[in-house]
Image 1 (cartoon, helix red, strand yellow):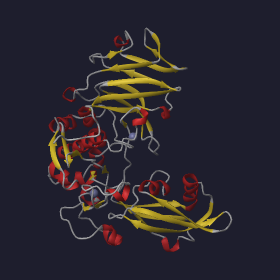
Image 2: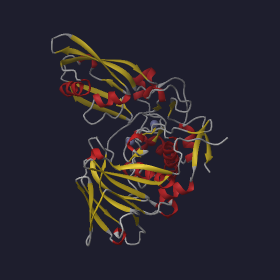
Image 3: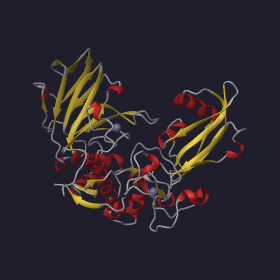
Image 4: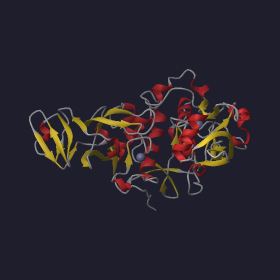
Length: 434
Ligand SMILES: [Zn+2]
Ligand SMILES: [Zn+2]
């Protein structure tokens, strides 16, 4: 039986510059050895051009020419076997960390085709490229240059499955398959591509995990906190048979982390425990824009005033005070499904408000997106009188599927990428497409 996937094409369309980025000037450049094809006659003879928004057109300025066009297309080759670091069309600027506190402007190098248009006075740039080239670039953007080979191979297969399964398909209405950011998968073209990640992509070429003849929806997050979370704790749509709770450790034991949070807080048998990385250069092995610190176990403090302003921001409710936080239900890894804020409104009435979903909870309890929704309120007993709330938590991200730090722990233990993937996606099998 043929393997089915959501992306019915060998090419993937990635949104790079989006209208909401408010970018009105872009510089494109390319090395003289790069064979450029373009629909703007003569443009390929330059090595650099600057693009500006000019009412409903785009002005292209090179050293010798000026063009006015409604849109433009440029392309170079995107065969994964021929890629190298910084190969392609250099684009400056591009937004990374869109909407997060680490949002910044970066420059990227893109293989394949670039389509640039003027969307109501803002630039839109879509990069269409071979899926194999895309996953090689994604694995690098998600990982550091010193990542072990089996970690890179695992991340590459996961990125390929996630891309082909196209379950989330968040951007189809906007004319592309995925965006370039953490909303989908972080993609920065070939800018940081290393020979190691390229090798991982070529060595695992077309290899995917399948379940019942379908490419799997390979979710992953940074650090599960010791137990991998169940799909249905975080997302709607019921259970997914291969995204189930499991101990992120060499030995499975009975029960779930949620059954005893205090005991689980001291659990260090996990592959992703911070204790495994005490003498490891984590920054070199994991992604680049991530904030440093401890993610396996953490503590954060938030002023109740800030919590009140988040409550206003996300629900429209203007309260006078917050007296209590009642946690109602958790998933197996301890991630909270929903909770109630309790307090006093402007009329002096006692009120309560539900905060639900892993995303909604992380947004509410931080100015910069909380590491995870797996936490306890450390000062619960005195919260009514305190001016702040202390969150004691574990893990970074939703915790479902592959745990990137756990996969690093496994790779450092010389476990192969296939065994790493078998651990995180139980019941799935490997196959090679085409
Ligand atoms: Zn996205
Ligand atoms: Zn883990």
